[in-house]
Length: 173
Image (cartoon, rainbow, N blue to C red; front, side):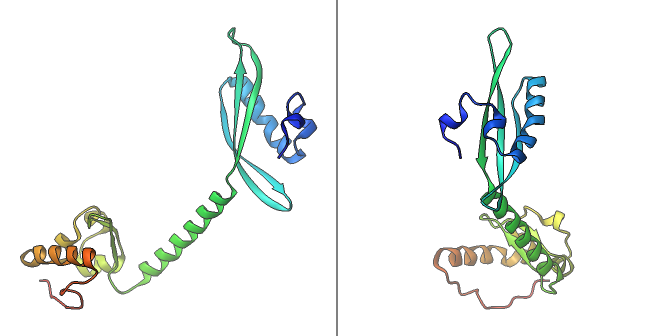
């Protein structure tokens, strides 16, 4: 970063690295033309490491509507970008694993509503993911006659970490 004294009153080209300057100039011209804030990602190498910034250039306009200058703000979002990429990679691995599984796999939200349903679950239960998405899992995977019993047992399991229903096999027809 630069100190206040190194920036205020100086021209952009006097303190901005060349690669940053080249990215900023077209954005500044766009902001001057439209006289509205411009938001964009900016890339810079600092200490040999590629960094990503979320940048904003806001025009400073007089009461008469004349362009006086601009305010430039940049926030380093490198870590967020790396985290996003890692999450995407993890999601892709998860999808590859669950979509190739022969076992039915589904995920529910905190209200026991289905938020993910793999191909094997589709084959086993006979419903497409879009048909079950958002539905209560017990209405799909259990017979109506024991659905309430499963609800109670599952609530007990979530509250206490144990249920007499765990480990038992039931056939639903």
